Length: 326
Image (cartoon, rainbow, N blue to C red; front, side, top):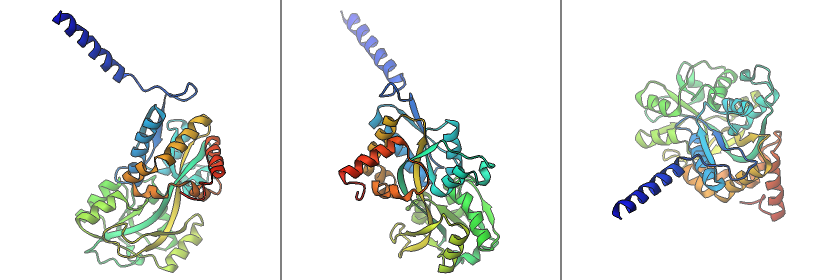
């Protein structure tokens, strides 16, 4: 009798293990089996935000959702176009370059499979050095070693343009922000140029260990950059975003959106957007930048078509009177 019971328990255990090993099925028959979210590199805001988004959506939608770490917006747009990723994060600057085929990485091709689904947060550009650094202004970046993140990332794309606009020459160093933060601490690079929602994990880590100082942008610097790159908008990193930041840091930035393939089912995208706004506190716990992930910021997109599922959500939100608020 005991043997029979033990055998029964063993079979039950095997069945439960087999069930756990099965892939998560899509909640609706017209949905894909799983979703891939293209994000960014370790140490960056895209990664922190995206890893939590994948967990949130997997739980809310009842399907497999995986994060794919990438070099950033330009690669993400290409992954959406190829169908390798179904959801991705982009800055509106790179989205515009991809849509029109004007970015160097596009080689003249227009990338038009992406559709906006929800606003994420502002990406301010920041130039940070260790407290002991003698660098005081942007003009002193000439000849210095500047860590700019992955080559296809936002800073990797824009910092060369910044330097050209400001008539400066410097050595640019690519890599994940986690790697570059370690290089800054070790003195292998002089400056870390970040383009990410604040607080930026890699900079927060260095600030806690060494203390950092943010190189200010003058009014003239900001004007020069905006004239050269009209997609840039005035941006501010608030005092307190980093322990060492005692006053607001005036800079330029780009807004970020999550995009999805145009051929994703309308009801799936509606469910994605609804899950994001219902569970924003969960995203914000993982990435404080998600405080700006609110329906009202849908207006920060001025050119990219919205997915039908997102339009349905924002239309119903207007009816319920929540787009203008939180």
